[in-house]
Image 1 (cartoon, one colour):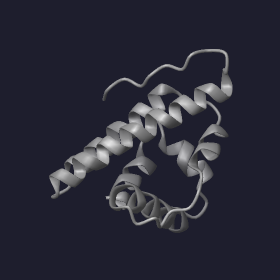
Image 2 (cartoon, helix red, strand yellow):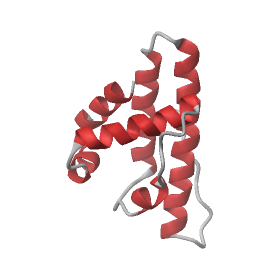
Image 3 (cartoon, helix red, strand yellow):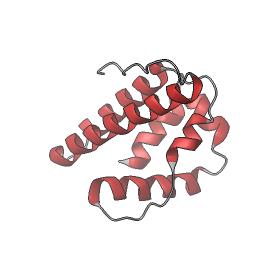
Image 4 (cartoon, one colour):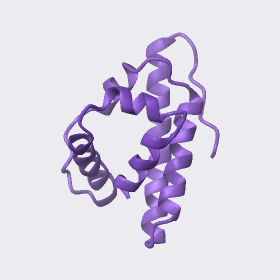
Length: 120
């Protein structure tokens, strides 16, 4: 799932350039992402890190960027043979995207209430 999803991300015209400009070693990055999603979906505790600072440091992210990420995630999980796991993964992705979007907005405009992502 992780490899399929990030292949779609890398090829996407909106968010692909953001990822491709910052990820120098995709094999290494994918290994971290597999650990991250393994921790989220299966409780393996394989991931150790803090994604928020990495995302807050990115310039010019928008709600549209996060919503595209979610749309691609939904498409990927919908194609998974294990429907229950796919639905759970998408639910977690929604929570993660909203949390990162809130954090991103609050880092740029701390005095302004953050907006929510649109359901995709």
